[in-house]
Every structure is written in C-alpha cells, then in structure tokens.
Image (tube, rainbow, N blue to C red; front, side, top):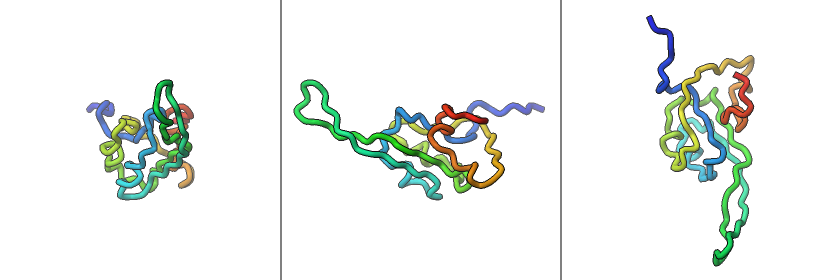
Length: 113
C-alpha cells in the first residue's frame, strides 16, 4: 500500500503573482465565484515607443477555498499560466476565514503550511 500522493495530483491552486496580468478571466469563469482580484492601471513608456502603454498591476488576489469546487477552470483559462495545480492538500483551518488565501499564501511567500 503506497501512501504517497502523486506529483500530478490536483491539490490546491497556486498563484505566480509576476505572471498575473489582472485580465480577470479566472474571476469571470469561476462557477463558484470564489476568486477576487483587485488591480490598478499604470502607464508605462519604453524608449522609442510612440505613446505610453497602460498595464494593470495586481494589488490583491484571493481564493476562498471554502467555496472553491476545485474544478480547475481558473487554471485552464489563465492565458499566462499564473495559476497552477500543486500537489499539497493541507487546508486545515480553525475557522472559515482561514480558508481564504491571499497572494502571500497562494504564492508560497507567506507559506504557513
């Protein structure tokens, strides 16, 4: 009997903040409305460009795993691979608010698991 979880198993969803362009596809396509995203627009200008470009900067991103169905639609629709499955399954929380994960927890930079 093997108790190891396969590396390709769908555990929880992780975020790569640098890859997220705040396009909102994951938020719009989520059937359980468990993803929230906040961003702001910034104008950038590159040398030699004719005009400035407006880009969105990610401010906040949360997934409420108390609502999430783990369907994977958000992972599939993300055109920039900012969301991915990870093989970890440890989402224990002492209350419901502990199931709401923000950028730090989703990216692993504030990993408490």
